[in-house]
Amino acid sequence: MRYSQDHKAQTHQRIIKEASARFRKDGIGATGLQPLMKALGLTHGGFYSHFKSKDELVEKALQEASDQVDGLCAEIFAQENPLHAFIDTYLSEWHQTSPHEGCPLPTISSELGLRGHPSPTSDAVLIARLNQIESTLKDNSADEAIVIMSTLVGALLLSRSVADAEFAQRILDVTRDHLKQSQD
Amino acid sequence: MRYSQDHKAQTHQRIIKEASARFRKDGIGATGLQPLMKALGLTHGGFYSHFKSKDELVEKALQEASDQVDGLCAEIFAQENPLHAFIDTYLSEWHQTSPHEGCPLPTISSELGLRGHPSPTSDAVLIARLNQIESTLKDNSADEAIVIMSTLVGALLLSRSVADAEFAQRILDVTRDHLKQSQD
DNA sequence: TGTACATCAGTGAACGCGCGTTCACTGATGTAC
DNA sequence: TGTACATCAGTGAACGCGCGTTCACTGATGTAC
Image (cartoon, rainbow over all chains, first blue to last red; front, side, top):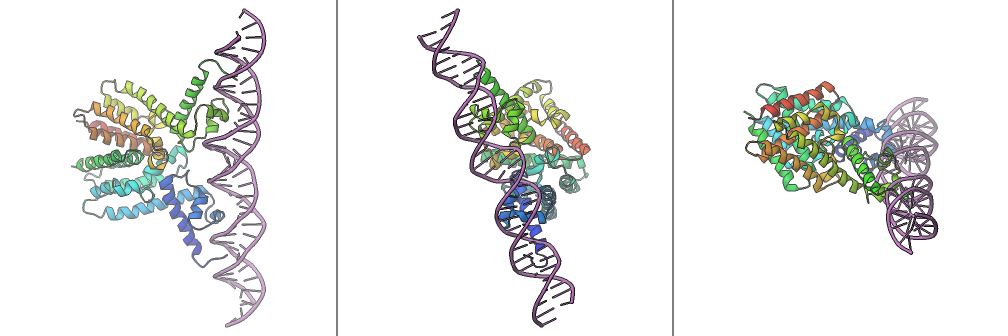
């Protein structure tokens, strides 16, 4: 059945948004197209009138995640102490328990690169974040931005992977304190 | 056919070793038991006379990876400047391109915890490394060990995920320099 | 020591399942007359 | 304005494939006599 004017564009966007969340929560490989479409009240066959393959969706969903994070970061970096605000949010309980709406780097980095979906889009996500961090540093140190981002990504990844909840919290707390006080 | 004395124990160990390498290289979910057994010159049916499920193998393979890394670290931490040696090795070109024989944390952390295989074994891997780092620090700071480990894991993960090889190398170099000079 | 038997690591076909993808079809809408 | 037709987003069955797992079987070895 044919749908009204912009119905297709809306559905297209709904698929990308849902995929973007699921890829971040469960990983790309573990996310099936069938369950994804079903969750949107659609049948899986229709997928291919929107995308030519799962890989194309991965690319679009990665871009969507990047845009979402850009939106969140716009607010965060507008605050009084942008770097502290970013660190606090990145290592917050919200981010720890909400991979589906947070930074894609700790969740899907391991599926990118050599391991599967090499794409300049994923590099762009990282670079965007690095540039934002760099702009808050006194000496505009690109190197320091890389270290800060590595630490944030590592701490969140480890925190999410650990079975002991108290230990998980400690990783976040300790790293947050360190990063904030290592600023001169 | 029945095999000589310790044949089973040998095969058992071969399966664990191969799995340990493949889980680290490709991830747990992306590693099939059929290809794994075939690579060892065995048929997949025989798998279940060694393990009761893939999950059991995951646990054993994680332990094996942990033991392997313990062995490597024993040598590294015996060097003159143990922490510098550890940082150098962790962020080396060898480790970047050899996930299958390196630290399991950057490669399979994202499949542990909430996302699939919660297990105290994985916590143990992290804790072992933290204790070793802590023992090299002047004030035996457990907190600082957590930050260092987070930074190492994050940098290696990002370095491996990035499409641009020069950028990948830069992440390693910059992080290595920072960690080594941040020691007082 | 030589023979008969029990063991059980490994074989290979088969199970149901979910995956990504294809495809003939449907039917409400937009368009043309 | 009213009717006939073309469009095409979405349907749902089917494709081949690899997954984890099961199972009846094999046959060289270790054991018992």
